[in-house]
Image 1 (tube, helix red, strand yellow):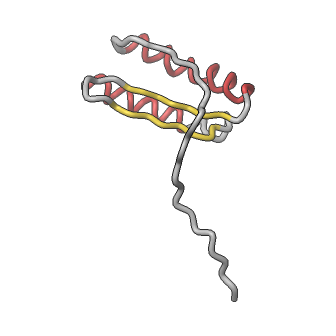
Image 2 (cartoon, helix red, strand yellow):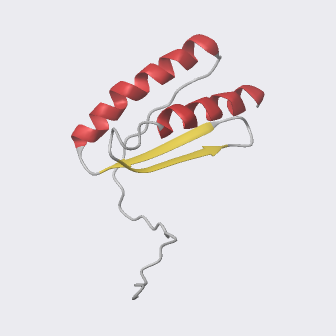
Length: 94
């Protein structure tokens, strides 16, 4: 579990820096009770996804060389997603 916490911290820092550059629409990470780290990403275009895969690959390669872990890749398409955002749509008139 300690290695998973270190990995999650490292991944969130590294991937967080790619949000603007790779035009991520969503980046969700969860740390499981058994020490699993799950990462979900969302992009508008396949070009943004490919750019992210290239840059994220460097981070994952560094982890492969530093920690013992296994990787599983799942590709899918969102068929339903709900994300509530805290936003203020009010106008201020002076």
